[in-house]
Image (cartoon, rainbow, N blue to C red):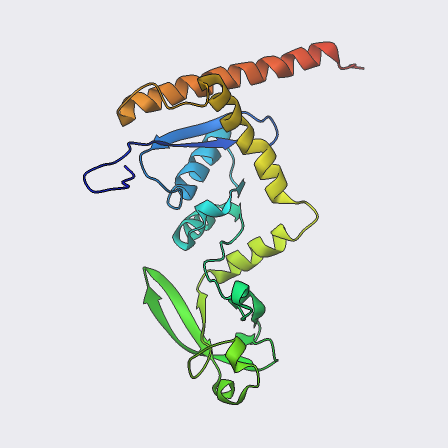
Length: 242
């Protein structure tokens, strides 16, 4: 329930679905009454993995699903995740350095700042249920571009214990395969089609159980029409068997 004023609110439902990139069929779906997607990634990815009968799966998602705990849960379940990392800091717009400007050397476990100084490992702790390490250097106090980096005594970099998964995601996003274009052209189509069928209005049902049933009927109709189109295409373009 999203509230905008005291003692008022708007009841809303968040529809989720996972689409197979080969067949464009919705393989699993759900409806929640949460106004965000951050804790839905592993649930939907694992359900899609079971529905497809795969030992491993590559899940594509938008940045609204980004969550360290969810990425780790997917990795443990044999699911590779690719999605952009949201930039929550406003430093880039201010012309100051962001974490992406600091490069990690996995062999030596150090970070290199934009001026080439090394930020060494200092300690490890748990924050919000995640194990993270801290890196910094005392050279910051003598750095000529310190004003573009930090207002403290030194710039500290935090590295999550599964940060390598985020680094691998970043590498995949920069590849020629362009996974996010594939994601948008696959998973957004069912939402657009179903909304068009509904007249771009709200769900007709009320209460979560009933809305889930309504969504299930829409998904069933979508998949039937999608399969029908594939069969019609095969009839127009018959395959030669020799």
